[in-house]
Length: 232
Image 1 (cartoon, helix red, strand yellow):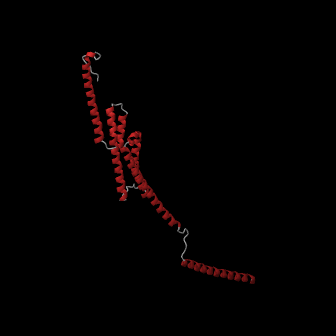
Image 2 (spheres, rainbow, N blue to C red):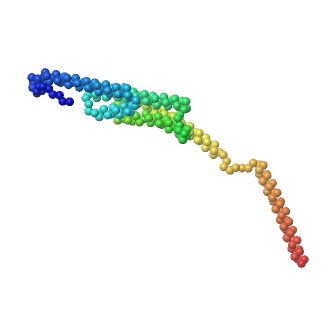
Image 3 (cartoon, helix red, strand yellow):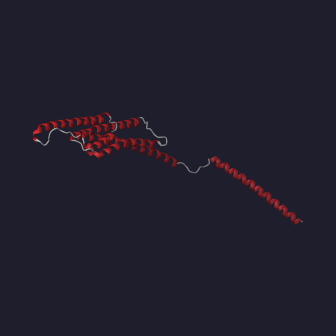
């Protein structure tokens, strides 16, 4: 707010009075800056639950034209964001290792084992990937020593998850290849056992004998009928 003074600020004889006013003004500004810095530091230290959310908050402060002291405070909060992201990477790594070592992968009921395991691992990977991609909007943060360290940690965990996905896919392929190879060796046509062939041949022979006797009887019947007609 504007403040009025009981003297002419452009009169040299009131220079000491003007200096007193400016000293008080600078002191008030410093007090306000300290309060803002304490608020920013406290917000990052006590309420920091997500590195991505904190980064968005930091980007909001970056867009404000503030004094150099506040800018330095905002820059210093980059370390807090990196530390939080480090914790998130470690949490994902611990979950991945505990679940995979104990083979306790949470799979949805409508997913097969292999596809469900890969989908679960990919979800963990995307959780940390989306955050670090967000950080690329402030590249200087990742160029810091802490930023480079956490980037290496991200790459190591990402490779670990990628190796797991490839191993799961290879296991599935080997399993499917064995099933297919075994199934292709099976016969498509079903053959009768040897005894069944003999029984069928005997039945055909018996059926043929009966047909022959019927034909002989029919021929004799025709011959008798022809002789009767001739005698008449």
